[in-house]
Image 1 (cartoon, helix red, strand yellow):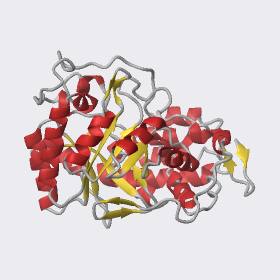
Image 2 (image 1 turned 180 degrees about the vertical axis):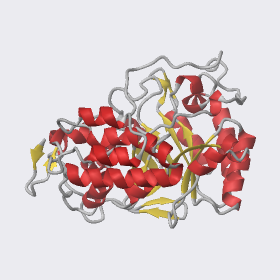
Image 3 (image 1 turned 180 degrees about the horizontal axis):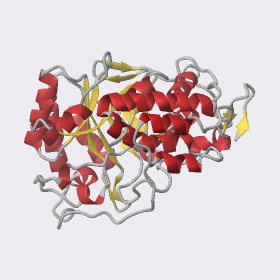
Length: 399
């Protein structure tokens, strides 16, 4: 990490990246929605609930998508599902990521959301690489069956009516079975208003580097709708590098904002041509962490709210020297009083470690062999879906 002329610390990889020039990047348009700067929060299971979205929104504009909501849970009026599908007062645009592997359920769930005026945007997840999901023919297995994928997207668009629909997917199953170009074409043909590509295969999971070249290939293949790039945007200048390299229309922010919600403030700055502000010291971060914990308790109750905060607390403090004991004790906390006592042990004057922005957080691990239903690839032209709990139990996909 090296200082710029303004004193802001940048990683060496971004040292020569210039801030946006006037008019260089247009606002992102998704149907009637205008997103400026062209930044979207990735839907992440167990993370992007209304509490996290409220924290992120305070740092900058963008499109903030809910965590994945199952069509089955909505239609069965599952209490937990509808809690996750809730929005904070005044939250706009209201964006939900819907998941399902049955076209009838998707159509009806989208119809319910649109008819009740509950949402302004619906995204659909075709990117989950979790074994039990792909083994049941869900998540990132679906684009390998293009007729099935078209059937699902068509049903969602029909049910959503006037509400714009987008979809998110990966490069493919593995390097031998790449599906992203055809998936993009299906999205455009079936009425989607934009597509997002997590530039890894399901076999990669969250390992290795994202293949930004694939984002550029998708943009060239689907010029008529916006293409969003996802993968390895850890710092604001990564977003500018991605857009310049690929020609994509916007960026999707996943793991880069975990424990670093001020990344959205930095993104506003660089897209406006300004150098980002200095990252907060640990004292300011503990205030953000506590506010986040309080909001989680408002949504889920104190016990579950503090339970949710354990992982966030680890992300907020990861990279700060001498905080490992704090994280160990936080994993045992059950009340806000215990959280407050632990926060009081942290050094408020500790500066943000320069390398901490690029420390990988949340999902990681190595490559995997993707589990698929029998003859899934051999019978790729079939449009049959697998309707079952595992196919609709998605783990989200924020790169």
